[in-house]
Length: 313
Image (cartoon, rainbow, N blue to C red):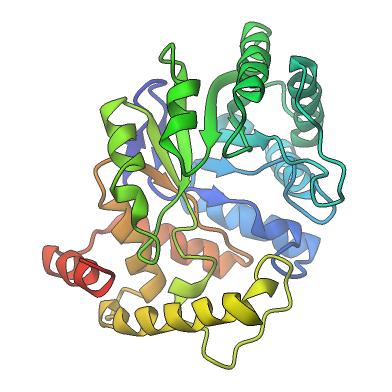
């Protein structure tokens, strides 16, 4: 797999990383053994950047627990860059922390360290995409305390906005931004990706398969039972889903021997010069291995040009 470097930290990671949201059950039930085998397949296939969050899983925190158990049992913690997020734990249950004091950040970090069964988090990400100025100060102070104690190694932000990135990077401290970017959502090409490149901030791409749409396996009759995509079943969400299916159909020319549509979609985001790593999810070992294979090759110049034209130029 192609290796890429985080500009500010010097970490080398596989271009395809592992997004662990799916193995926690929010995208539909996943047996614990299958979740663990999926993660092991990802590791064996060369994924060295693992991303999760304290809010991921049913119940919240389960994704971290699975990662922690496997990395500890297999003694592979030192082989990966481990990233998690803080800011949304218990939000789904109606009891989010207000983050009015840096202690909130520190306590969440301690809980994540416990679930992950490790003594440090490599990349700790604010999970509130548009924090208020007061919250920004709380997070930065909390991150500084955790850096000083050696509990985290670098800080990042999950957002789609340039403004919060500038606030978190005011002293050049922001190591990475996690953002939603795909063939079906190319808006970051206009502002956030160029900002990352200009400021030497790693770009971590979530949603490169657009919540599964770019796997090309859904149709007009598809209904969703998982909590993440349930909004696609009715109303405006359904209308947008059907419209995006038309775009997916226009991209099927990317399917060819040795390349699935999903692999082409991953290769498209990796082609952007600002992108450091893409983190698709997987719920089975076969999916993890197929995702990893996308990091072994690139789209042709003609494929890139046609894909851009099919998705708005």
